Length: 332
Image (cartoon, rainbow, N blue to C red; front, side, top):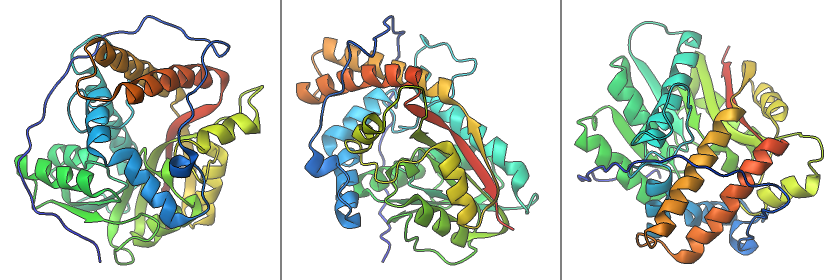
């Protein structure tokens, strides 16, 4: 059964972000390998789920992501950087919220139900940052339901909702978006921000999103996807997938095709790849700042591995190893 959590008060923090002045090359940067027994492709859905928990739901990883992606908050999504000064305090957090707003504004016109109260589900909701942002900004969102695998993140989600007085409009469930604990046709909007990259099966995930969405409803997700740059080998793409809890590594075109197969109509990809490069650069900058300060309680090995891997990610974006963007669709 899905598990709901008691609500507690946790205070949010804010840490500034400074600019990065470096351009690593593919020839000089190599990614650090991680334990394939934990993060590799196992072919076992239960083992895959346990690996995701280890990637996100330990005390050290929660602190790492809060500092590196959240500017000291719990918003750990990639950002949309239009009009944001990279050197301003809290730049990454502002870009993450701007991406959430962009997605909702893009999809809201697709609702069959254009007036009155809206219900939405955030699939792979992490610490619930997107649900909180949208319910706070849009009074017409009657209920935002978060579904997420990681219990510690879910506790944070409800704690933050209570702090903001949104506990009556936000529910949090523990579970997988590949087997949603919800009724057919329960929501107007299925939403997901940077979470389906970890799906054991994209097709199954998209089918579940379709099942729980009302007829006339809409679906939108942002995600890191497989690129098709010249000179990018299958082995290089497989190496990323096999070290980052990526079991079903699809290109934008394949994601759109999987959405269509799952029953979605007019599935469309919007390419936002330049923004992911900026996100990686700001993350690398933050990691280097933490290292210079002595680690802030995060292990040296973890910080050094992320420093090397993020530098590699930037060059891989330039070479077309990755794409990042949004897919949106409707339900007939």
